[in-house]
Image (cartoon, rainbow, N blue to C red; front, side, top):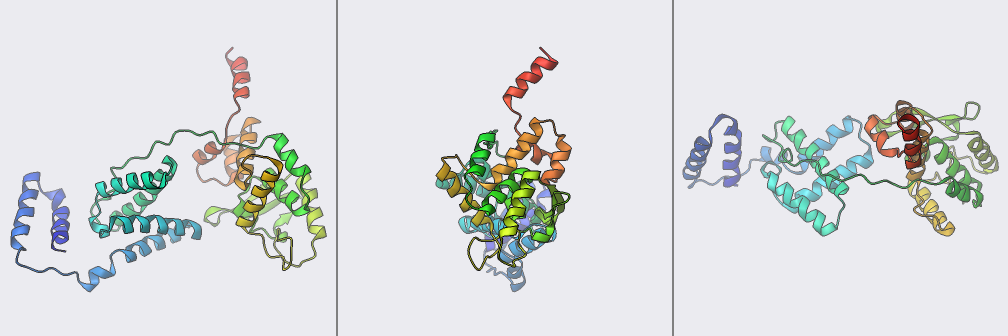
Length: 327
């Protein structure tokens, strides 16, 4: 405790002292406090550790972060604190570097995962710095992890048709068409109610990340399959998609993911999951010349950089464009 007090004082004076003066201050404090006992006051305990994490999460909630994001933030920060075993105020850059290195080695984590952890810790410590709980964020000198560019898979036209042709349940066919034609997130789809769908305009209102409302559009095939599914329903649940058996509860994200994964395995298709439909739509839209700004609005992205990550331009079209404009 005594050493922590000395460290706090020295860090607080760093902007005002030279290196020689800092060393002298440290020496004087060590000598002066040698015969004294130092204890942490109740007030200090109230603003340490868990309370600071809770305050940070409250601030992020006000900014519009979802409960899922807040849980991820909490788990990430708490894991770091449990491993380093230091008071938040006394964590230094080397502590964070060692933690990230050991985490990657022990968990065999990808560079993307490590950079996500770094980004969350940076957000937490930057907030502590802004709120004057610490002098300087220890993550400030830890730079973004270079992750490289991975070309992620999309569904081929053949794969989509195979899934449609082999659907036994009207609900599953409607789900596949809804995801494929709108590009909405699976979390947005399961929140939809019947009344949210406008069949005349072939559109529906969804609530995306940060509770942002936007309109998405579906094609004529989706309209027909969705109407067929709803006409055969025997329940009064307002949810657009429900379980196949009584009590016909609203379908959840996990239910859609498991259903599609098992369906893909049965058909011998590689990596069938909801988000792949979204990526496929983005790629197809860019490939056919849809302006990136319009795609950004359709997908509900706040930053255009996020939209660009979803869109892959086919190499064959690059060749055609080269011949058209250059060769």
